[in-house]
Length: 107
Length: 120
Image 1 (tube, each protein chain N blue to C red):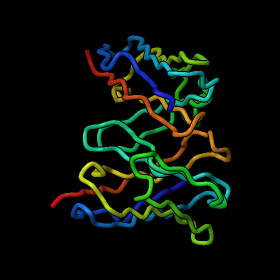
Image 2: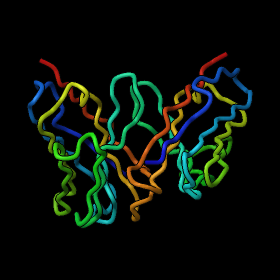
Image 3: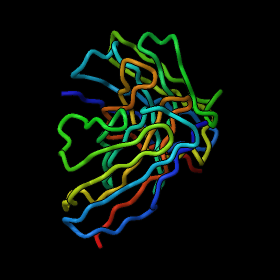
Image 4: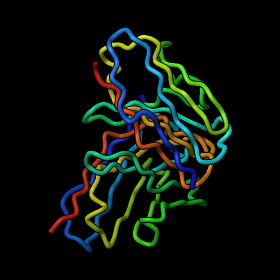
């Protein structure tokens, strides 16, 4: 099983600042990594797939990078609606797995 | 517009059974892998089961193997999850989710979820 580790667990950021979230895979998953945003009481929303491709309708302030075992999600200038939990996810190897999440909250 | 609507959640006693349904619309259901993902209260996401377009391949996370069965009816644009021998640790919101055309494709759409509570 591919274990995904996310850091930090919590990230406190002021609106307008940059946020950098990390996801590390226990073995290489090429570029088969996705990022999701989840707000309380809502289903997750796909942000990034293929490590760096923004999903439909996702603002340009969200960007993804990385390959192999190291991946990064960057939010260039945090807006109020971006405070949420972010999960990385792989389905390159079965079982598909999710990281434990990074909570981005207001500083 | 892609829509996934779950139904069938509720309260069940340990050892009991429940069947979740997911009605899909707004896309060609038979062209996509479909999945169930769950989230225990206050916890992260866990992939439960995954099914190929024609039903010829099914995958389960170890913790539900032998107890849960994923199925689909492409004529009815519906996905199902039959759950038996339920345990307290199966308590979660269960999401119906659309994968892609390949097994490794990520989920791109999620339903709003159905709450399953296993308790006496």
